[in-house]
Image (cartoon, rainbow, N blue to C red; front, side, top):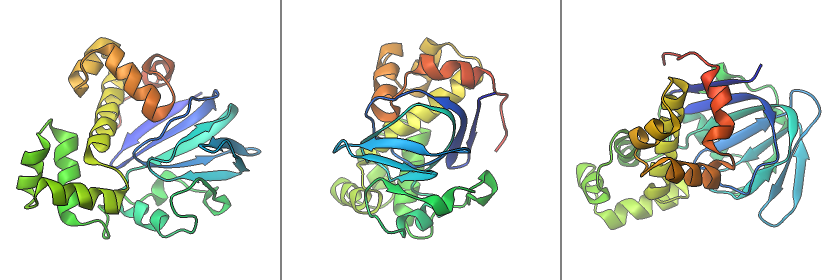
Length: 223
């Protein structure tokens, strides 16, 4: 039976996947094939195949259909992401067979020790509330320009992209807890259900309707 779990700085999905659209998300993705290999295609149409594949944040790719896949999403300001940033391959989709036995218990839930603490605080503010970016910058003691530069340098993405990811995460939690698609969209900060659908397809390659059966099959987990 497919399963989905959201924890402190990570999410895990186990189950079948269909061919996704081209997308890029704001977290590290580790896709593991419990049997056989997982296959993805990058932005240059190059096929990558291995028992485990690692996709850094904001790298365009699409996943090819698999009967069973274990997928971890690790947010870039968590400690486990520090280890992933140190790996060879840089900002590219790469084979990661050494991660094939990864488990949830191995993913550190503590904040990163490498990402600037001001940026970690900014990410938390952006995720928790719809605070205007100038106010976020002021709260962490940076100008908006310096905060943008810091996010781009250390995370490889603007904070506006992170805000979308954080809203998608909140929408998934709301759907899991029984909200309708329309309710989850508004609660998470999207204009409406159509807006949620567009953003999820662009960032995750799937639609809320496609993941709803899996989300509804899970009970809420305290983290």
